[in-house]
Image (tube, rainbow, N blue to C red; front, side):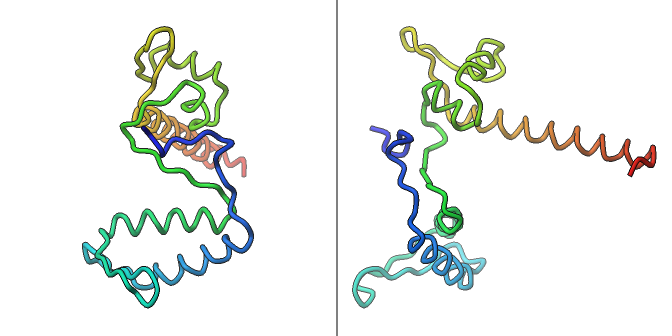
Length: 152
């Protein structure tokens, strides 16, 4: 069971109080992260549980807290998770119809389960990274052309 992939209705937006707490907690945690591979953490009343967390997990926690501080709902998903076409479309912020067109054009790998398509999250994220890279490159080229023609 993949608990990380949530339906939109299951996402809970943080309250104003939770957002403020996330912002403060994030600042406090960020101030103590070092280049060490682990970070000590204490949970429970009077630090009843003491653990060492991998620094990569703590950085992920900081990303979550930052999003919560901005008032955004957050969900985690393993990169190897398989998504429905609607979940993949939501991840790309496109319509399901557009996502299906990308799949039909073989721009994003997928597989069929019966009549349904399944897309790996890592493939969707790779497509998104490549699309963003191409957009940045096109914008840089337009900026260079603008400066070359002195159209500022």
